[in-house]
Length: 252
Image 1: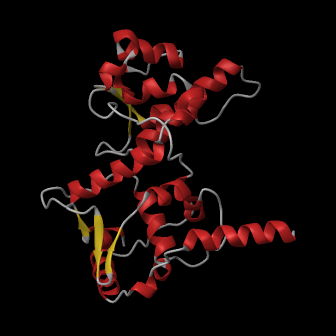
Image 2 (image 1 turned 180 degrees about the horizontal axis):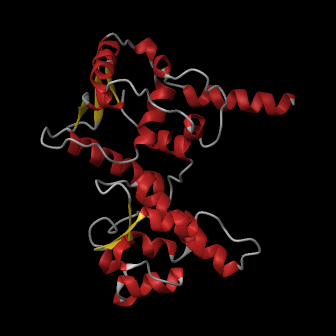
């Protein structure tokens, strides 16, 4: 499904070219689907010149040791990245009766995994990048950044890159794109996922794509997209959701 949608992405306009016109993922979608803040400081520099963000020019691995209390084994390190498995094994379960310092360390670990493998996934796929150290160093300040803008920008960048025929693998926040499709195009929603959760993308948390051969599924989705009309798109889906939620809350 995602592959068929990506084929319709136009880098010139950052939109999907559909039979009824153009449509795209917006900041509103990111805010509702992922619950990320729109307002705030720009998340900048970390994707290319992150070394310059290090505190007072402090070496990245020195800072890592200070924030997490230890360094990963050498076989888990590659340049400025750490294997996801090390983070997962280390910070998966918070110890009982953990101190405030330990809670903060585990929170940093979880956020580093979330940023590297859910919001800003790259071609490495299963690695956690040290570029996020300047942000997790100040947990109280994390909410002051426009993470929705950064996530949307990264999605656009990844879609534009895969539009190049020489790039075969799509990366980026694909769960955002998938959830956007399900919410905006009801005909593509899987059955059995009726509960409305927050953030809205959590609704599809247990959804598993079909294991059937990909080729025929892509062709079938192409044909379905060719037949779409403006009536097949939910333009005001969020208004309907939250009006219903308020009504249920007030009646209950």
